[in-house]
Image (tube, rainbow, N blue to C red):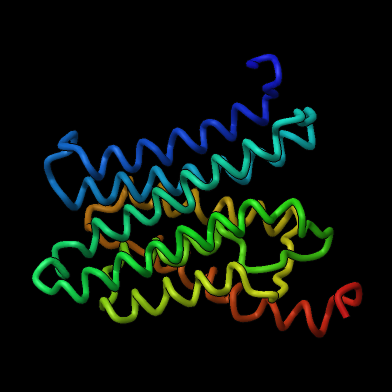
Length: 234
């Protein structure tokens, strides 16, 4: 079976591995200090998302395998759906343990995110279009809810963000497909956030805020751009 793998598939497997390691860091005692544990886990998911963007670049340059599309979706499910859901749960679990209702609501919303994110990923190749994405891209959705959770925004707003993002991922809404330059800028911004984490002494830094603002701009302005400025979509 290993003969089916291409270089791009190795990058996809790196994506899945980083997502798995992010979960391990959260659930184990490898790092005693909780803020650092959260910071490292967040950084690993960011690196997984960078790998997710790079596998397509590598596939276009060196070719893709027959299993590349399936492997990419499965790797994305690990980092963007499972690792992200676990991360959010671990951030907020202590604040909802005292209230069974809030705990159940948090679990239900995360299950919705996991379910709709998975549906979005497996539908990607069926709905693939040269000019746009149908539904909010799962990696963008993961970044949005991850940064909201990392910044520990109020629980109600967290639930709202995860719920809206989940619906947007499977909605019949078109979002622009970034070209190489925009994709490179997005990758640089994610990498900047990662480096900012390493260099910043405080728990909070400008990186997550910049990332969140960029994703919100894309989420709001993207469908408007598609509707009024992309002729192929009219």
